[in-house]
Amino acid sequence: MASGGRTDLDGGAVAPLTICVIGAGGFIGSHLCEKLMAETPHTVLAVDVYCDKIRHLVDPPPPHLAGRIAFHRLNIKNDSRLEGLIKMADLTINLAAICTPADYNTRPLDTIYSNFIDALPVVKYCSENSKRLIHFSTCEVYGKTIGSFLPKDHPLRKEAEFYVLTEDESPCIFGPIVKQRWSYACAKQLIERLVFAEGAENGLEFTIVRPFNWIGPRMDFIPGVDGPSEGVPRVLACFSNNLLRREPLKLVDGGESQRTFVYIKDAIEAVLLMIENPARANGHIFNVGNPDNEVTVRELAEMMTEVYAKVSGEPPLEEPVIDVSAKEFYGEGYDDSDKRIPDMTLINKQLGWNPKTPLKDLLETTLTYQHKTYKEAVKTQMCLATAT
Ligand code: NAD
Ligand code: UDP
Image (cartoon, rainbow, N blue to C red; front, side):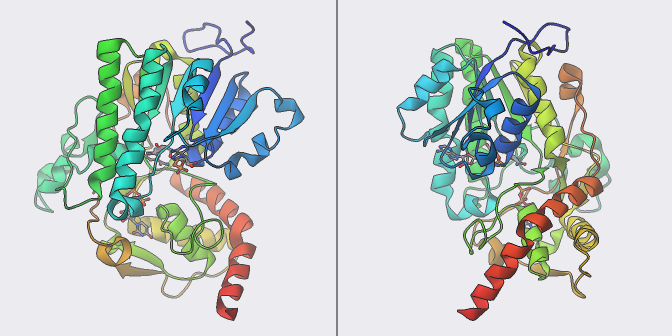
């Protein structure tokens, strides 16, 4: 079959694939589908319970994509069509999950079911039908760093081995069961172990992805506009919402936790390399992040405030941030990862991938999108809320 002119990293032709993307309607799924449609000859079976973020691709597909992408509205919890779709595909990519921290301690059962139980049939059907699987896990499986247990000013905290997170070496360190924050990490860890064991015992061809805070347009929702008013999305959308409403950004427990943020479009390049280079990607767990984009949450808030002022033309508030306790913001049972620096050695060696976009640039693109997409809707929603 024609390769559409695409070659793998070893110079071989890449045959057009049929890919079953589960969770295709989410943040990462929407960017992945766009990339596959724009740059490859691959065909996508897009599975999700909703398709708002890929409506432009599937409802209906534009003429040039006819036959290349089809949306299948189904809940993988309980739909007998799932196995048929996996059988039709050469490769399945499972993105479906509850993955917003506000849910981990308040809806721990849904979180565990979604990230472990609901993923089981996907792994089973791939294994039984000898189909390749790319499973999305999370950097959160590392939990806390070893260094976080040392006193604050201990010199060992500065040693890489006390904080750099390495796929096949670092331990997974979670808090106690009463800290239900870790329900997500624990469920993801167990599904990773299951996928790995299917590989070892039954020959499943798999790749596991551990995203480190991928961010960009279409991430999550703006509460009261395209999501519930009381909903708490991930930090990018929380801070965007605050900026759009001209209210202070809330720093949980002082905003001291550190994160590395990677631009979604850089990260999707890594996923495409995994898709098209099975011989290099199979059997591996890959960190996908940008170690050069590390900030504390407080620094992120300051940067977003500055960038938003630039792209919106609105001056920042006099008091741009306020402190809030984790209990107030997330409720009982919240806990946090202190620091997340991905070791990039493996993905660099296997796939030659490196992230490109500095944090400032990716925030500028993303906040320009947020402002254009949401500013008027937020204004309308705020007027309606004060009128009632
Ligand atoms: P997202 O919430 O935007 O996307 C998940 C999608 O899965 C949603 O569209 C949802 O409707 C769908 N889904 C959930 N349960 C389903 C079910 N039972 N049946 C059918 N569809 C279902 O999240 P995302 O940011 O795109 O994340 C995708 C994956 O990557 C998740 O597994 C997540 O744990 C992992 N991840 C993402 C990040 C990140 O930085 N964005 C970080 C760590 C891990
Ligand atoms: N956070 C915050 N204010 C908010 C939302 C999140 O201070 O309005 C913090 C949160 O406590 C965590 C970090 O930002 O330390 C990143 O949170 P996110 O929800 O993006 O997910 P995580 O990286 O923890 O998986």
